[in-house]
Image (cartoon, rainbow, N blue to C red):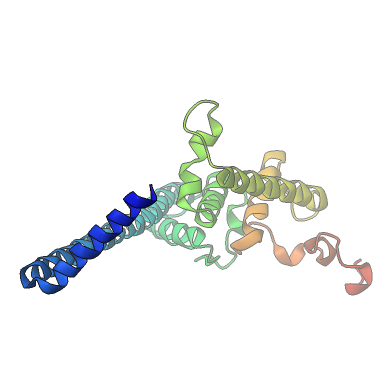
Length: 238
C-alpha cells in the first residue's frame, strides 16, 4: 500500500508540473476555475432570489391576515353597533375604526365612554375581544387553532400549544377574578350573562388593549391590583 501511495503522489506531482509548463493546460485549468466561480455565483443568486420570494410571501401573508381579520371584525362590529341603535353610517364607521384599533391593541374608541354603553351588547364585546387576542397572537398560532381543537389532523407544534394554553389560562383566571371581586360593584347592575360577558371582555382588554365596558373609576383601587398591594397603600374606602 505504501508503494502504491508513493506512485500516486509521484503521478500527481508530475501532472501538476506538466500543468505549470504547459500554457494550454494552464489556460484550461483557469477556464474550469472561472466556470466553478460562475456556477457558485449563480447558485448564490438563485438562493437570494428564493429567500426574497419567501420573504415577500411571508409579508403578504401577514398583511392579508391583518386586513381579513380587521375587515371581518369591522363588519361584525357594524352589525353589533347597529343592533344597539347606532345609525347605519355611524355603525359602519365605528365598526371599522374599532376593529382596526382592537386588532392593533390601541384601545382608541370613538365613543367618549369607550364601550361602557355597549355593556349589554355581547356581539360588540366578544368581537372586540377576539380581535385583541388575534392581534396579540401570530397568524401562525391563530390559523393553527382548528388543528389544535381537532383530535385528528396535522400535528401542532409545542410552541403553538404553549401559546394557546397559556393565553386561555390567563384569560380564564382574569375572568374569574373580575367576576369574584366586581360581582356586586361595577357588574352589579347587569344580568348573570352580561356579568360573564363583561368579565371576560375586561380580562382580555386589560392585559394589553385598554378598552373598557365597565366604569374603571368605580373599580376599587385594591381590586385593580388584584389585592397584591397592602391596604395602607390606598385611601380608606367608605
